[in-house]
Each structure stands twice: as structure tokens, then as C-alpha cells.
Amino acid sequence: MLRNCQHHGIAVFLVVGSSGAAFISSTAVTSTLHSINPFQPSSQQPFQQSVSRADYELLKTGMTITAAQASLGRAIESSRDQTSVTYKWTNGNGSGITAVFKGDCLISKQQSGLK
Image (cartoon, rainbow, N blue to C red; front, side, top):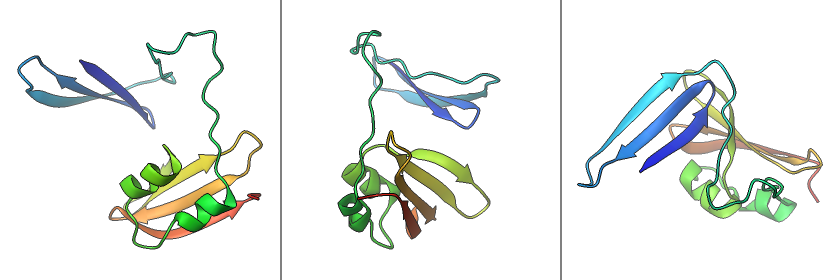
């Protein structure tokens, strides 16, 4: 089984063999990767994220990114520096949530245009 994730110009692959042994491989890419879901016909529209003001209130200082994504759905990593990672949940109308994590713990959050 092969899983592929997009991460700022790096393709990361988790390869799991039939014996259960796994390894991670990464490679730099020069073009944008597109997620392919083999269970979704290509004629369907891509998933549209939907986050609300209530979702924003669910985010608490100290929460991990795993817990945040369990509550709000998958986030997009928008930036990374030496000490922190910024993730975004963005609605189709441009409104959304921005959260900054340091050491996998939420240290700040902002919302824009949420109702």
C-alpha cells in the first residue's frame, strides 16, 4: 500500500509491505501534487471545507494538531519556521481559521469572516 501526502514541495510516501513492515520516503518535487482518491469519481467536485465560529471556539491553547484536526477536519499547512507551524482551515468563501502550533501544541489562533 502506498500513501502520498503533499507538504510544501516535498512528496512523502509511507510504504507498508504485506508483512506489515513500513518505511517513509520523501522526495523534492518541482510541480504541485494533486490528491487522488481512488474511491471518488473524477467527475465529482472536490471536497469543500466548512468551518464555523463554533469550530473556532473548539480550539483551545495547548491542543495538539491531531486533536484539532479530529475536531475540525484536515488542515492545510501554510507556513513553517524553526519553532512553529501554521495551519489553515479555509471555507469556499475565503473565511476560515488560522492556528499556530509550537512543539505540536496550539499557541495562537485567529478567525476571519466566520459566522
